Length: 322
Picture 1 (cartoon, rainbow, N blue to C red):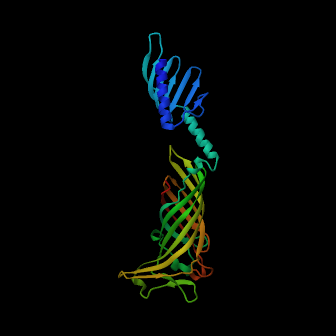
Picture 2: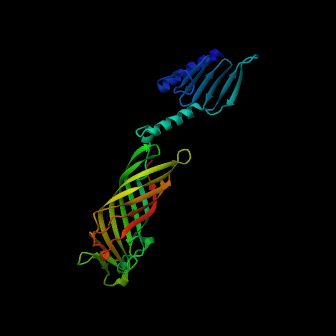
Picture 3: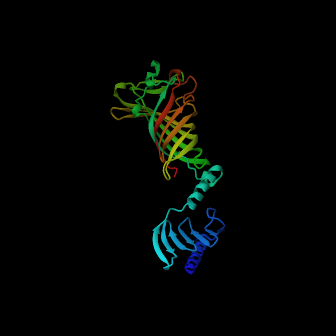
């Protein structure tokens, strides 16, 4: 049986040298490498426990993963048994140790495998508050919205992830944020003679089918994201941070009953820049998000009748991080 064992071990060494290029001999099992020897016992491991050969005075085991053949020495001669063995422990230990070591170093391979959840598509509802209340002052009631028909759509084009550990890191990127605010009344808004946003009522307001105010921004976030393992490779994702935006366009649109459309592009006294707080939570590539813009939306004293509503949005996201 020794000759058989030696031939198998020699073949294993040749296969391993061909597949991996190197073979490491160790003094104790449990250390790095593919071969261990102790006394007359010899153990060869090819790949990540793909093939294991153990040769001792009393037996020879040849395993492919956790199934294989045992050849036992006895007084009656060799006995052959086909068995299912326990899953190898050494590789699991080395794998766990390897991941733990990666997580300790920000620049390690584990940290480099971190991928945030920003790039993708987002859909939701948008509205705004004044003094943290959804009830607007009476003199700007014309700004009231139909929440269920005021939509937000975000296309987060790209992202940059910087892992601090395998499951924790910083995320930034670039995205487009489009909001469509549907007015509740048969009115629109315009910049009045005093350069302040005011109500616009079409000559025949009763013929208005719908009216809305739209904005387009370029967004850049700065997020901290935590990923919590849930199963073999799935993750629960929690992220929060700040988000800044640059105004690209603003417009009003009125659709009349006869399907005539009146669209007006303009500045509408909006500030060029805005910033807010954002948070996201989800499972794998499905997320829920919310964003609240705390900086002044309109220029000082140039909003609707001098007020400055604060917009927010909530919705769902489908990310492309993988």
